[in-house]
Amino acid sequence: MPEMNTASMPDIVFAILFFFMVTTTMRSETLMVKVHIPTASEVQKLEKKSLVTYINIGAPMDARLGTGTQMQLNDRFAQVSEIQDYIAQEKASMSEADQPLMTVSIKADEDTRMQYITDVKQALRQAYALKISYSARKAEI
Amino acid sequence: MAKSSRKVPGLNASSMADVSFLLLTFFLLVSNMDVDSGLARRLPPPPQTEDLSSVDVQRRNLFVVLVNSQNETMAANQHATEWYANEAELRGEAGGKMSLKDKVKEFVLNPSNSADLPELEEQDFGEPIGFVPVTAAHVISIQNDATTSYKAYIAVQNEVVKAYNELRNEGAKKYFNSSYGELTEDQQKQIQNLYPQRISEAEPKNYGGGE
Image (cartoon, rainbow over all chains, first blue to last red):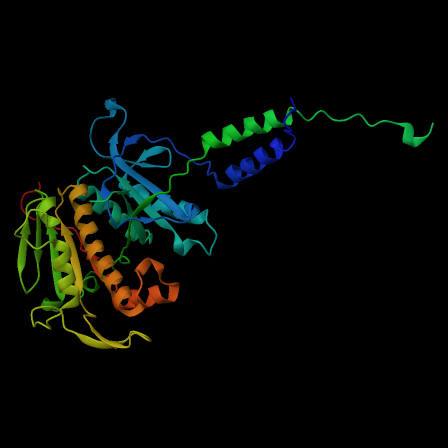
């Protein structure tokens, strides 16, 4: 029985490997709040991941922290008043040309009260982060 | 010793596949392919002074969509006021009521040139659209109460965006004979200029119901 030539297998594997190395974004923060985002039919995809800043809003995963709405910025809980500093910091880490294109994706739980969202929106306005996106799952309604 | 007689030992590369497979599985597990999606909005810049924050809009040009603390929706313009008790009514599935989407479309188009709907104004949009009357000054104001749930708010936002998307699609069909998604970037710009999304998310107000 003739042996199959597997000499090119490493090459193929390397090709796939490079693809994943290039497309992967390593910064995946662990969620500390329960976020069940609402559904909508008219969602648009957020194109450039490097331009997107995330704000997670929901009840804490840890039941000991209560059931009140909390906000997570990066890897810690934060108050609405801290948004401005956070946005400034995120903006500073982008290149000058990308800064006006920065998009803030609000990932909020669907049971959140609008008061909280409105406060966040006002804070974003003050921070001049005017491009926002209400994160929602695509669903045909 | 002659150079040619020396043998270069072959490097055993059979484990290379194993190593690269390991790396590959690592990146496979670490990468998350899911792309975030959502409803894009543009916030107005912060008000510089108190008195500048309000812009006068003619009553007929204003369409107020109010979501209250019971997650009910009121859609009111000078022409008519509609009340939606739940999401099914909002989408016009409950029967009897015109859906919010159709109300928005009627408001933006003002097909009958009614005096109660936004005023029409002839504008040039370039070839092949040409001069078309549009309601250039219309504003859809989405307002909410402090205790409105985010879900209800997004549902209303979605309906309004859907109305605009359908208008743009209809415009693309009419002027370019294809769907909006298939147009070139310039053509999409033209259609966007024809039907710009004029949605205002008002400052929060506390109407009755919320604490």
